[in-house]
Amino acid sequence: MCRTCGCDDHQFEPVATQIKLDDKLLAKNDRLAEVLRARLARDHIAACNVIGSPGAGKTTLLEHTIRALRDVSISVIEGDQATDHDARRIAATGARVMQVNTDAGCHLDAAMIERGLTELAPAPRSLVVIENVGNLVCPALFDLGEQAKVVVVSLTEGEDKPLKYPHVFRAARAMVLTKFDLAPHLDVDPVRYIEHARRINPAIEVFPVAAKHGHGMAEWCGWLRRQIGAVA
Amino acid sequence: MCRTCGCDDHQFEPVATQIKLDDKLLAKNDRLAEVLRARLARDHIAACNVIGSPGAGKTTLLEHTIRALRDVSISVIEGDQATDHDARRIAATGARVMQVNTDAGCHLDAAMIERGLTELAPAPRSLVVIENVGNLVCPALFDLGEQAKVVVVSLTEGEDKPLKYPHVFRAARAMVLTKFDLAPHLDVDPVRYIEHARRINPAIEVFPVAAKHGHGMAEWCGWLRRQIGAVA
Image (cartoon, rainbow over all chains, first blue to last red):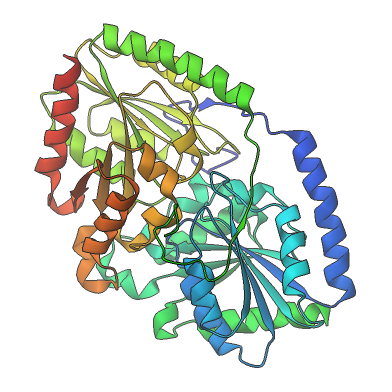
C-alpha cells in the first residue's frame, strides 16, 4: 500500500520531486516559535493556528466562534496577502484584532506572531487565534508557537483533500469541516472525507459545522474551551 | 484609495511584511521557462498553467474540457502534493497525462514541466494543460513557460478572493468561476466576484461555469481553441 495516500497501487508512478526548503530560515523561525510558546505558557494563554484554503470559511467560523464564546477574552491575528477585510469582520464581533498583510508571502511566520502578541497584548488566561494566510500547503510547515494547529476545510472542496494534501492534516490537532449545510447539493461523501483525514492522522479531532446555521458549533467551541482549560 | 484592494481606507493599518523570495532560484526557473516557451512556440503547442486552491474544481473542469474538445490532442501534467488520483481521472478521459508529486512543495516549477514535456512528447499543434498544485498563492510567482495562466476559483470561495489574493488574478489571462450551479444556495454575489477580479486585472477574461452540468463550457472551450489557434 502506498505510504502517503493509502492507495493499493500507483498506476502512474508519480514523479516525486524535492523542493529544498531553506533550512536556516525554518530553524530561525522554529527557535523564535519556541520562545513564543514558553511566553504563552507562562501567561496561561491558549493559541490556535487556523489553516485552510482561501474561502474555506475560516473567518466565518471565527466570527460565530467569538460570538458563541462571549465569556472568553479572544485576540485574533489575521493573515492575508492583501486588504483588511477580515480584520474588520472580526472587529465587528468585539474581539481584539490585528491584520497582517503578507503581499506575495504565502504563510505567517513566528516573527509576525511576535509583533502581533506585542501589539494585541492578550490577557493572561485568554485565547489567541491566528488565522493564517489562505493556503492549505505552506502554513503547515511553519511553527508559530501555537498550542494547536487547526485545519479548516469545506465540504465543497471534496473528500480527497486529506489524501492529496496530507502535511497539514498530519500537523493538525483538529479539523473543522465547514459548509455542511451544502451537503445535499454536492457529490461529496462526508463519511469518506473524515475517514481520509483519520487515515492520515488517526488522532485528529473532527468537527463538522455549518457555522451560519449554528450546526456543530457547540462541539467545536467545547474543544476550544478545553484548550483554554489545558493551559489555565 | 488603497492601491492593492481598492478600499477607501484601511481601518486597521495592516502590518505589511516582506518575505524575501530566493531571487536566484526564481531567476534560474525563469531562464528555463523561457527555453520551454521557445520550444513550445517552435512546435506550435499551446500551454495553459491552471492555478487554483485545492477543491476549486480544476480536475473536474479539465475532465469535461477534454471530453468537449474531442478533436484536440491534449496532454496534461498533474501537480499534487501526494497521490495519483487526478492523473487517473484524466487518463480515464483518454488524454495523455503525467503525475508530479511535490510532497511538501507548494508549486510546480519549470524543471518539472521540462520533465513532463520530455515524457509526454506532445504532438505539434496540440494543447498542453498544466494543473498546478492546489494553491492560490505560490504558483502565481513561477513562470512555467506557459502561454497563459488560468485562475480557477469556485463560487463557494466567496467574492472577496480577487482582492485578498491579487497576485494570481493579476498574472492570469483568464478566470474560470466554477460551481455556478451552487449559486442559489450561497450568500455570494457573482457580479461582485467578477467585478473584483476586473478591478485587479481589467483585461482578465471571465468564464462562469458549472462543468458537471455543461453550463458555460462552450465559451471556455472557445477561448481554449483560440489559444491553440494563436500558436498554430
